[in-house]
Image (cartoon, rainbow, N blue to C red):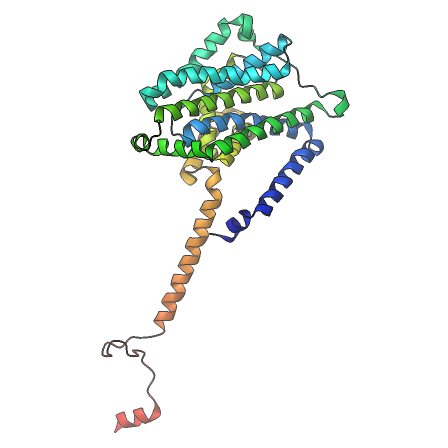
Length: 364
């Protein structure tokens, strides 16, 4: 175990890190400019969506290509509830529960058929969702979409709107990450890992693969609804384009880039989803898709485990270099002593330069 790992496992260090994170979460929105606050809020939105995808794919090993559908569904529920003047707490609950129920129904129908069936069903979700959103114009606004402005900062706070929105995202996303971390590090997480490794072994241990697949997919759908609510908090507008299949593929790529099966990787994946298009647009707006594909390929070749595996890569390289240096020193030390083939076992086989008396004896 490395020294850094041993230090991080001490309770006081953990509490210190938590305190620093809390302080930064409180202070940063007050000192950062509006663009930075908005960017961080958007990262939080999509980090929650990637987190849900990580539960079903990274931790359980199931294929899901429709996470964006649940984000869009949560966004539509939020927009409709706000326009109907429903209580915002009720809107939030419905934005979480409705996608979770839909995800549960989809998982109940597809989980018994294997991973490929789930993949095909989830591919169909965003493909069907876009025309469905256009047809249900009474609830979705059709092709025009829906807007909902409900996150203006209250006057008593003295905050700007971008600061208030970032605080909402930090609070809800932080709770989502904390609860999900507890889920995947507890008995359910161990069951997810066994199901991912070998379903036959899981069944022999009394763990129902079907039950845990359904649970993982439901949790992922619920987190998709949470990200949909946060999407409306920040973006305040949704349309059928929100549900497009291309966004779902980008979410999948973000999960892989950040790190599958990692809570921190989900956060890094959200940053990749938001920041990469901005960076590629700065380079050349006409080559955005090409540059994003190149970044994805390079990252997969260099870091197959995602960005979260970067510190581990550095540690391995350092250990390899230290091991190579130790081997070279050992080889150099052994080269200074020349073994004698005529010496018996266990005898001193090192040869020494002849003394003066030995040279005279040889001359005579």
